[in-house]
Length: 101
Image (tube, rainbow, N blue to C red; front, side, top):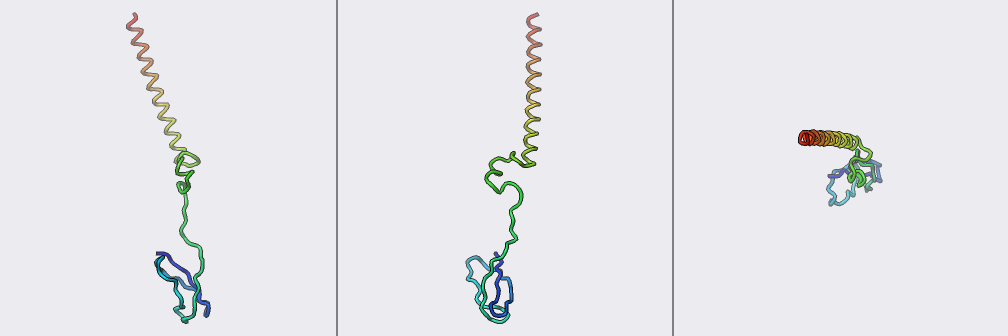
């Protein structure tokens, strides 16, 4: 539930109240029963890190540590598959030479 901040117009008392979004705003001060106004205050909720924007979410490999790691792993996998292909090709050539002789 959100925390709302109020200020009394009579005694200038500032206080907070935990209320549902659907609750009506408070109208009286708990200290002096004077009229209160709702204040606009900074919230403590922050979104940090990557993945909170469409550009970050859509392309993880762009400008992120995880993306750089992912790129390195792809290169490593590509090198391994290239080596495996070259071994297969060289063994095919060797078996062709044996058959031709």
